[in-house]
Length: 111
Image (cartoon, rainbow, N blue to C red):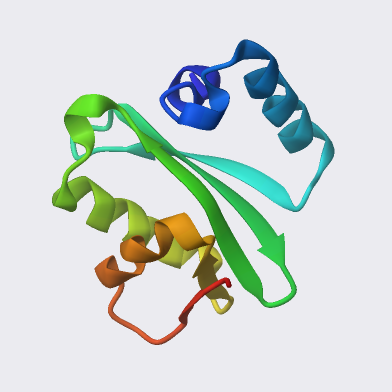
């Protein structure tokens, strides 16, 4: 499931890159993949994160093509906010736009 969702991202269309990324997640405890379920409880997305000192960094988001809308992005970001707990939720530069779906100040863009 995870490999299929990751393959929607340009960096992971190459099978070797995809396999290397999956190995990273299996070896590094700071890296985590979260599956995202929509309102119908179908797995339609995946979020790659990295746990840092007092922060959770969103590395990438991959949603199935029919589910790339504001409702799913908002719900996904709210769930990620809950996962971060008291930690700051940060993003890599290309995902800064997702922070608009959060309503509190515990977010930061990672330059």
